[in-house]
Image (cartoon, rainbow, N blue to C red; front, top):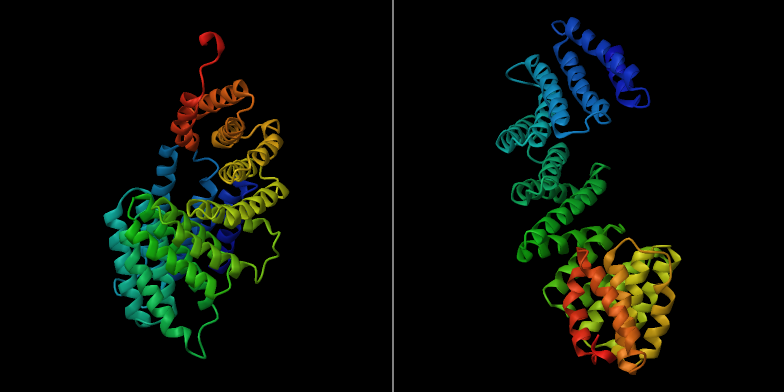
Length: 407
């Protein structure tokens, strides 16, 4: 059986030669079928490994939803074979692994009720075998939370997340805490972040913001850079809710924390500077907003991120006009209008809008301002985020004097 398990392991790894891998897998499953009666648990483990290998090997071939369903059905049948070999009253963790694998497959096939039942059964079994506070229970609960969060089912994920965090907190203060617990803590923070984003996507700010706040705190206390993702999502949620002061507080704290481990010119800090500039602009604090916008421009340019660089330039230009510095706005936008084409419509439209705004403020070359606004309007009709600027573009167009000749 050890040889069969090794064959399954090799089958999962030999993705460059799927046919050879499939032959190795078939041999392993044949061994499991022949030896199952004499070594049922070992045979069950091979079937479970076979189900995983079947999914991996079929990834390159399952190009349609129908093909994907067939793969899941084959894998589910292998899991069923594994479970049929196990005793009705299990005394090992093999059935837990089988239930977990089956739950993932059930969810992938849209059978949420069956998946929920399998998750409940495996956690009950794990608690019975290991005790409520065993680190393995925390791991299984975390896996369940992750499974539901990936399915955008935060209500189903949250109880499992709380159970995992309860077990983690109980062990964290212990001098003999298992070494894998800190990593589990970071994974739980990532799950909280995913759940928070799911709630925000559903328009449930009151549920999403606390989850993102907790995710950021957990990542920051562990010194993990993923706190930046949570802080950014949290700040954007505050900005969407017209609470720029809250966004500023989150971003300033995050910037200070990141600067303890990252150099000030690190590319990852660009997003903090950009969103800080937005928050400060909304608060009317234009001088510091301009400083952060300039930092974002420099960092995105150095990182070669063309679309984000264009957006930062547009933001810096907008702030410059608001500060009564339209000439500076013209300098900002000149460098991106004729640079290689951006892929994001907003990154194409917004710099044109801000350059036109600067020309209008200077009462200079109004035909050029009109041309830029018409280009921006045409781009905004493509869709995406650029559409959000359409009303602003149209307002500026209507405010312009009619062109000579009435055209």
